[in-house]
Image (cartoon, rainbow, N blue to C red; front, side, top):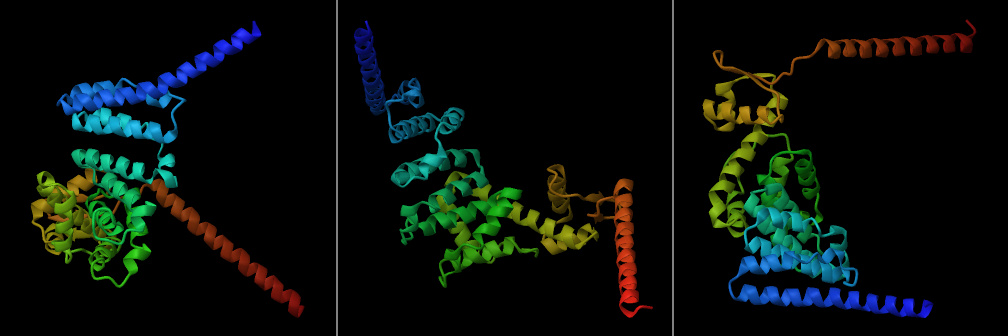
Length: 335
């Protein structure tokens, strides 16, 4: 009985392994045939019907390769939600392994296509940064899309278009310290300069000094259909940066004067301020009859009491230290 059970178990195990491997291979071939016939929806449905992540007989590489094909077909079908859900199945830690570099490039290439559709500049910057950090890309010194120069420029481009957030600010400050941007290279100098401008609390004029190379990169990676959108975003993000800078230097300022500093009309200043205040990125109050903007946040009574308590505690500390020094002198000189 024991022998029969062992033989049955081995046969079942072999059948399962055989089933997993062959089903994934045959499904992919069938999807390829349907795609060649123009039936993208059928090919996509065929691939998504296989939950390859549950197939223990397949290696990590085979599973990821199959999932990437699922993502590609869902993007071709323009099923953006399904593409996002499918992309979540890929463990990004596995993509960091040396033998997974080609799959990593494919994966982030597909994510770029998805995030372009979503107009998510920060995610696009992260996608290009992940490609830039890939070993084979860092070894490629060419200016082609396969080289690190192209991907680094694309990362900076979309990072400047991204909404201000702790993550975006942290990435800006990390990139400005990148060793590759410190090279005496005329091709990279504009990108270093733009990063420096947006990490410094100074007003940045628009159009930027390096607007031409930025526009050139946007045309290359931002798609023609979204050209006007990215142009608008560039102006908006620059204006928002300038308003945050103004809020650090001014407590109150006339709206006309602020518009003059930023090169905007009064209505445009109010519109951009309203967007920042509504998003919780900035505190401001506009007195429209007087034409004054106040950036000073009102202090609550609790905060005032806390400040007083802190001042009293500092004073008592100084008094205690002074008494200690007086007693020390008395003991030394035996007064």
